[in-house]
Length: 445
Image (tube, rainbow, N blue to C red):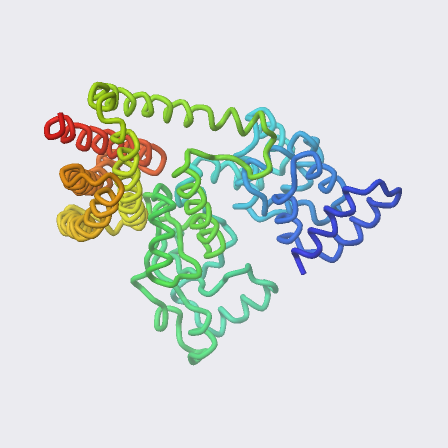
């Protein structure tokens, strides 16, 4: 249904119809905020602004919070400060902060100055923390109780509140000084004797996150322990908020998206304008151009051998290409292990040996195939043996590069997903060319 609505909107936009805006508005009214956000993300920039202008005002805040950072920034030019203030004030704290963090400082200051003192203090508290930390994810829509209260009193308190915040699977137990001391599950409140005290049924050894903990650590712990919500405390162990599963899922999706795009050196909206996309890709392409020159220099060393034995030029891309593909496979495995924090000093050696064994096994099979094809093609036994040897050498180098390049980059505080593939491919290209052409120079000239 979502895809159908999208295609219908695109079809209407492409036509010159007097009532096309009314038609689109009618379709949008049947879509929820997530569907509209997906539609905007699937639309080129100019059409996106047209659709945004038609969205019902009551739905704009939820749609805006669903959009990615770059698309939000693209739409901010269409929204005045007064309109933006109305939008963000209808959002939950974490969603409000996510949007404010994408704004220029001047607009943030204006919006904060127009908020009530309580809202401003709440927002400024979260803005103090880095976006990729537990503090940047927290929401202060928490329900806290004290341990000497009875469950019956807690139930009455919950009834007096009315609607409890979404993803509330537990209440947080605090001391009179707001120190975090435990968790009380909603299921315990319902199933236990109402005369019991909170201290009788609460979990007095709960896990809480410090405000400065990495969002990756938070998402990993949520995934490992199947959490729905968890407390966030400061260095005095005071309860300042909670993190919920919906925000953790956003972190996981964003990290996966960034890692995927970083592998190709891309960080852009799918439908961003050509000039913006070109500007973001040129650095990556320039880096690849430099590495291409490095590989060309390696080939140039053996120019005499290529001039005398022309078919070396036909065969040498095979060796380099196979090494590059094998290195990318190993690199992907290692990047995944690093992202999931599965790789450590204790198991790195085992992983390297495993990848080395895989390279040897694949090397034996592939070198036999390539040597057989080479012999049938050129009818030269020595050449067949040389390309087989070069293939094995390059597959072994692909393991060394694929395993250790991302490890080294991580320890140098560089993103291995961005730089890893360039370095690894360059290594296998150079080793492939040098090993094959070097052996040919020794044995065929």
